[in-house]
Image (cartoon, rainbow, N blue to C red):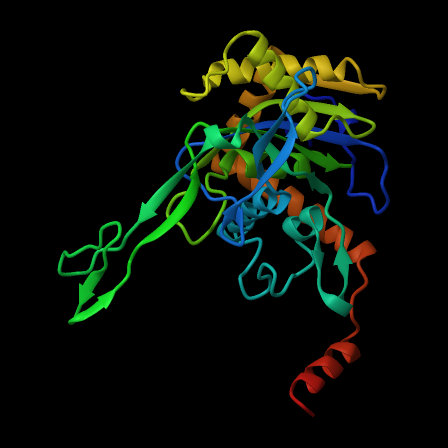
Length: 344
């Protein structure tokens, strides 16, 4: 029984196929920072020197959000839901430690477990780029840590604890609030339940970046879905098109954050312009057409009955795929591996 009334069943596969079948669902997302997240490698914020726009040829440095910094938090949210509704246990499936290979997370997002098997991700996410330049999008903070007695080191000084002088000063670059990262999340050959599973993960995920921080609040503002028989434009080109439009409308001001309404309008207009240049077969849900779909998805995922139905169907499909296509180790092989692990 289909979940969605606003979409034709032709956009989805009846079952998860083993080989690529040429159906793509592209979720169009603008990721909006709402605190001071960290997207970094080796202690420095990730950035890239690229062309400002498609029309504007000047080079600028942009903050980057690598693909794993996007997909990992989203799949962890999905795994949390599966455990909450009794479709996964921490003992059977632990992220990056031991994959069960038979649940929606493992089958849709993929896994690799040495000789035990692997499954290629059906969710394609590429590096996202900030619309605004690096210099306008980050801020350097001087960090300190108070002791329990209330003393605190200040810049250029040191703190004191039990008669010992200890330095508690550190500097760290953070991404500012209201920085925008246009990002296209692509699903290959989705079933309807798989599509809704990934869609729901996007809507629910609230924190991205360095997991050791207490910040990192990011909201996903979905603006549309494109169903096609191939891949569409890149995150970078979409971002550059948005930049060109905002610049043409004199809405880029280095002293002030971008207005979110302006960004959403420009993002919608830019993707429609880019899609008009594509040479693939595609059906676009952007603007009013997408609003009806988004409302229906939110209504489904916002009720316990609705989300349980989606998760159970996705789980049934994943287990059927596992049984049919994923090579299972024989009991003898398992026993041999366990014996070897014990040194026997």
